Amino acid sequence: MQNRVRNVLGGLVAVVLAVFLPLAHAPASAYVTPTAPYSYAPNSYARYLDVVADNPDAELAGGFSTTLPTDPVELRAALDGVRAAGVAPERYGTLARQYWLAVGADNAGIDLAQWEPARGLEANLATVDKVYVNYLRLYNSHDGFWWTGMAGLAGMSFAAGFWDLDEVGGLLTVPGVHELGTGVAGALAGLPWELADSTPRDVRLLATAGPTLRQPDVDWYLHRLLVMQRHIFMDMVPMHEAYAAEGLPAVEELAASGAYDDYVVDAWRMLDEGSLDGRSEALLRMASREQNQIIADQWDAVAAGRGDLGRVLTYITTVGGAPDIPGASPLGQFRPLSVRADVGGQPTVLRTPLPGFNWADRGPRWEYIEQDLVPAFRSLVRDWPAEAPRHLDVGFRPRAEQNRILVRLPVFLGQMTTGWVVGPG
Image (cartoon, rainbow, N blue to C red):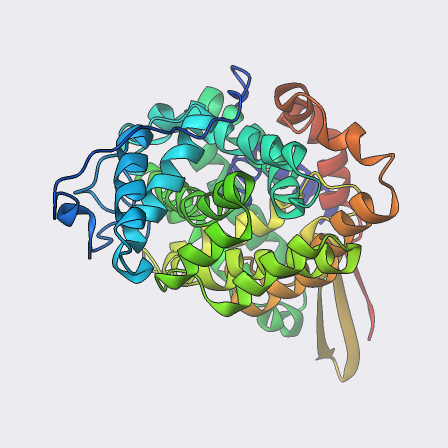
């Protein structure tokens, strides 16, 4: 069994690493908060009021509203105008979010008009990097922005996988999945039927549906990942930019529009207190908002998409998951798959290095983040502050290069090809 698994995984590593979790071609731009004078005749700002956010899930180019501009100078003039006129914040909530998003995109060097997931991976590859470079920039701009630091480090393995996919995707993605599916099918065929039948549905789907996967299926999955990356940026970055420029009142102004609930606003109040305990809780709450509110429905839809292939692709994502955060566990080590069954009347267990859950499922995804990922990052910045800059105050590209296939291959193969044991249960 070990030889079969080893042969299969050699060709699969690229696609596995390419699609994991949540490209520094140029340094991030300096922080700016555009300002502009405004001169409004009565009701001249009406077009900015009561605007419907018709792009709430980040599917399209532009901002929250496709009817509003994305120029931060123009948006700032409008925001100053409605504030001066004493308009209730709930009436200009979309304008405020669009403004702070535009500021964040400008600081990140991202053109919102060109950032469109439907254009595909190649067209968005540079932006993929800039998102994570910007998270690290925000972390290093304020000693309480722990969530952005965690997001930036986790993004290093994600971006590295995208680079590999861009270079060799046509060679290794679909064939790699086919080989893995065939290899898993062979491995299951070599087990006692009682153990094979007791393996989780995702593993059995990998064996049966994996070999049917085609390039459009992979392209669909990458598109969904690009959408989720954009959605997180659109939701979280405006709050960080607003706080960085104008403090807690600007975050509370955003919340008055109904876009943010008390759970996350209280996180900002805790962060604002400046205590380590407050920042720790803010980190956890922001991670929860990211995974349990912003993209939870999107993960559900992906897992249910394209027949059984959504489950196949999301499980492969889980197999390759290894965030580049010191002390964080690869997903397969956090909860390895064990299967128990009676074989010939004897309790028997199969232990594997595969993860015993699917990243797309809300419950186990949050358990991993809450119990492993957040504590690992919190320990780094809270308990080892002198060590943190070595991981967080470095160039994104050199660090992310360490996550590329050729660097990770020996360790990954070792993890995946050892520990397959059938024994008494």
